[in-house]
Structures are given as C-alpha cells and as structure tokens.
Image (tube, rainbow, N blue to C red; front, top):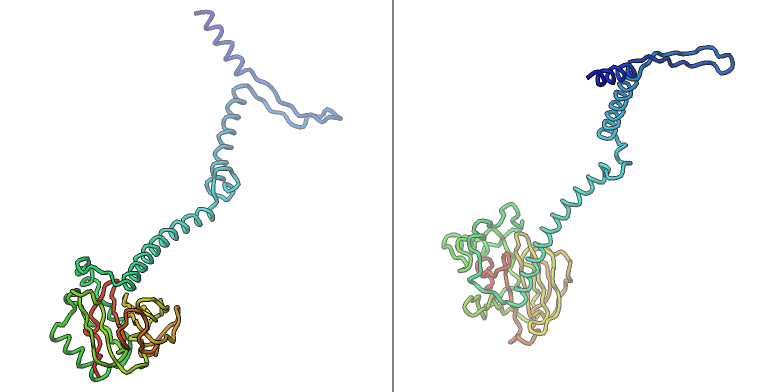
Length: 289
C-alpha cells in the first residue's frame, strides 16, 4: 500500500508540477511572452483542440463543396446526373417495351396471322378511344346516317363488343364490296372494287409507317393514326407517299390496282386495326356509291 500510494503521489506530482513557457527575443533575451503550464493542462488543451479540429473538419465535409475533393465522395452534380440517368433508363425501358409491342402489331398486320381468342375485350372496353382526339373532318350525309344507324343498332365487330364509334373515317374508295370482313375465314379486311386506277385516299390523319412492295400483296401502304388505329391498303397499282410522311384525311396515297401474286383483279384490300387487332371497316365507313 505505501508503495502504491507513493507511486500515485509521484504521478500526481508530475501532472500538476508547474512549468513556465517563455518566449524571448533572440538578440536581447527580452521576455516577450510567458505562460504557466503543467502536464495536465497540456493534455486537456490538446484533447480539446483535437476535438474542435475534428468537428470543424466534419462540418466542412458535410456542408460545403470541399467534400467533392475527398476520395470516396461524389459531387452533387454527379449524383443528380446519376439519378436523372436512372429515371431516363426506366423511361427508355418503357418506350422499348411499347415499341416492341407496336412492332409485333405491325407484323400481325402484314402477316394477317391473328387468333381471335387472344383478343382482350375487357382491355379494349376499359380503354376506349379518346373523344378529345376525334379527327376534325366534316362527315357527309351518308356517313352521318351510317354512324347514327351503327350507334342505334349496336352493330359492332364480334371481336369488340360495345366498342364506341368515336372516329370519323374518310372512305378510301367507293365501290362494291367483293369480299367482306370474316373472322372465320381469316379475311381481316374488305375487298372493294372501284374503277381501275381510282385514287386511294387516307381514311384519317396519320403518318405512313410502311410503304413498300411485297410479293403477295404488291404495293402496300400502312398508316398509323391516333388512338392506336392503323389502316392498311394493299394491291395498289402505285403509291404516292413514302414511309415517314404525314398525311391528312382524304389525301391521295396511291391508286387502285392488281399488284401482288394474291390479287384476283383490280381492287383495294383494306384493313382496319385497333391496338394490334382487326376490326370490321364497314362498321365505320360506307364504301358503297
């Protein structure tokens, strides 16, 4: 016990033993500054200074732009750009999925390979066609009577029960229908026989998404309209529009002909597709003279 007490007294004496820090003029040895210290004061002041320095460093890193120069910290601009890029990637994925679905629809239009049982009636019934996007074209008296009769009689395509007629469509040609729309026979179009080389007109405003020659159907032009509506014109003698061109309702896009191996004579093979599925054009257009 005496030894421990003696050791404790010695440590206390060392910590509390006072020293004097003096700053002298080198030439005159004049005392310029003096400070009384002991080891305990030095430890306390050094600890407080270290804590203050650490706190100041943390504040500078957390709330100023200096953190950008510290390895491991990303700048605010880089973080913002990363977030924007992430949102853009998400948007591009959505657009890519929509484009893929759209291309599949175009393939179905060109091939005519459609299974009626796969048609989602409920989706079409929920979605409908946006009335605010109705094409502003003055209908003829015949078209008005037809639309009124269709609305009253519920004359809808078997694939689209209760589908609202909200579009005013311009007749592509006028003439007798030689082959009607038929799901059973997989004839998803109407064949109209007008006078040879009669101008073929666009049924509504839109953009040409396909205007090429095919072996089976000859000169084909496909137009995409609003509300996911697509119109297809086959067996044309010639085309007056190219892919990517904008067209107006009633604008000439080709002439009636008999091009393609599947043609049996001068006529227009006309198809109308909604959201990737065929609909009966006679529900929307009066073809007869």
